[in-house]
Length: 377
Image (cartoon, rainbow, N blue to C red; front, top):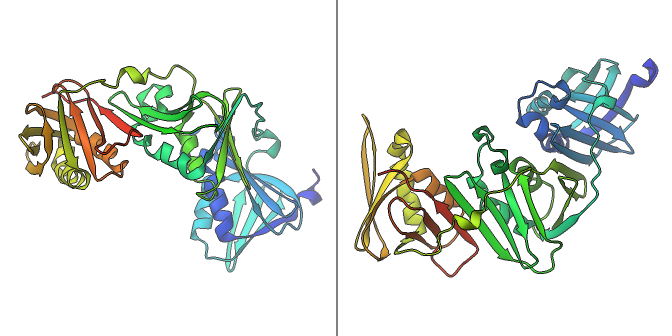
């Protein structure tokens, strides 16, 4: 590429649309710390009156295309975080991008000018891979988001050291779609009947990729297609595309973890329990979020304490089955599950104070359940 070819106007684009595109495509580049410079960059390509942005971290590619006034075609790489920070501080209007020489790009809006250093050569940027499909499922976007949001709170953090648990299992058998997440302390399962939405699937998709897919510019009533093949998942919509590696390994046999019976059951108003947990956690957070629940007939006492700070007690009305029980839970785990539910009442199914409990809607709704391990008494 000659010097004359490099010294050209790249594009003009409305700031709001450009910022939204950078935020989406830049997710791989800004979401993780990296020592590889190219992974901190965005590929910026201007041609055919379109701006194409691509971010990559070696495991996920996110592409976004937005209409732009392109005077001259060109491709550069720019620091994703810097580009996002600058656009976030500029006023609304049309942003002008111009590659003034081989090492810098000028971004202007109104009286503001920013000269940004050009990154690696575009040819060094990882190409968005093509994927030969081995399975596909088509799902309404609203249903997809419900399937993800219902269980994502139970995904293990990446620091836990078990990569397979940092994603959500998508399992479709031709009749039901199950989404499952666990961090070994709790297990969340969402199940909904769907007929004829595609091929049978058993794949663990990283939560990072699912979070990006949820942000795609798709109406709730539209459908998205999850294409799987060659160890990857692809979701492509009008103007956006996500390609991610699937997580390798064996997802825990979650069905074995779900208790098949109980000898005690508490039915509780969801909002009342949620509010009480939030109060108890003020002190419990200083003690590993430990909250003790004690039943006495149709009354449930909740207690939390923090050494040196104080104690908290709440009493709730419940509908109880079976003998009284005292049991301790991580209150944050209970609260996370409650916030994923919409029912008026919930049921907590228990056996003993050292055995897992099942929290689910009290109504006849088999679509969601959460298994929670108790804490030591």
